[in-house]
Image 1: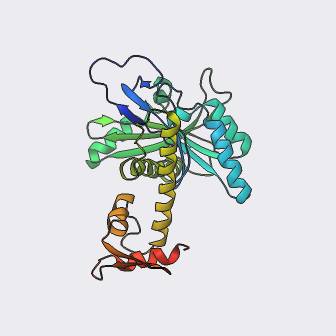
Image 2 (image 1 turned 30 degrees about the vertical axis):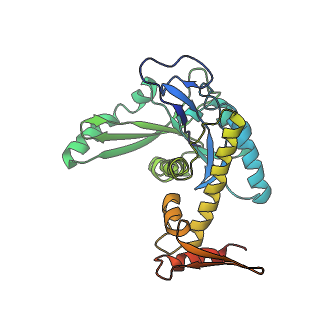
Image 3 (image 1 turned 90 degrees about the horizontal axis):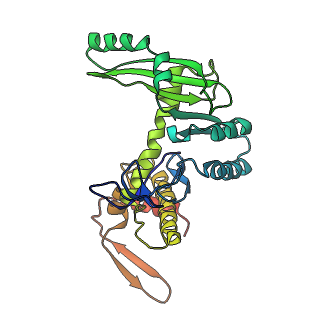
Length: 294
């Protein structure tokens, strides 16, 4: 569940006045939508005011999505990945009640950093000796002083980059012994970056960031159209498996498969589209056409 923001107006100079569209951290007016993705498929996207809590309403939306998935696939195992804005008691307790595994980023603080203090010098020494980035992993049981109802498993990545240390933390539900700390971080949590790439694709290639209409409902409709376009793009990519366009972005697919010159002939019985015989991706176009119902 990555976060994003749809910019309305860049504010330069003093911080923008408080209001429903102003975002204190990013210092501009925006409509930040929480996204829920399954791979590159968007499952939920809702615009909210810039001053909204990032986790507000996410439990209800996630519950609806999970209910729909289980209705179609009752035995499927569900894993939720999210960034640190969603490391909340309400969200984690909901997933635990529903039997859903999760791996969520955890903002670092003094208490967490103190737990990995012995690993920091070792990672630095390894980095200097090998002249490259060094990583170490460990996990431990951790609870907050007030906000969490119980202790939970935290996985720590102690990484030393050239000139600085970069520790990171995630809180996870799979108990120790089911997956190593390295596996939890690198194989389970880090692929969350693919959802970030999907958001970037929606904003840059599928125009999800066009939220300049006055009514919020109109902007929400634009966001939904962008999400529908993302689903269609994913289906096109699936049809292009084992081709040079199997991993193409939506922008590349639009340029190479959709924005092409053609002659359209309309008669009483049919509409004929004649493409240039020298089109370099005519085989890929024919493959997509054959796999989509007419």
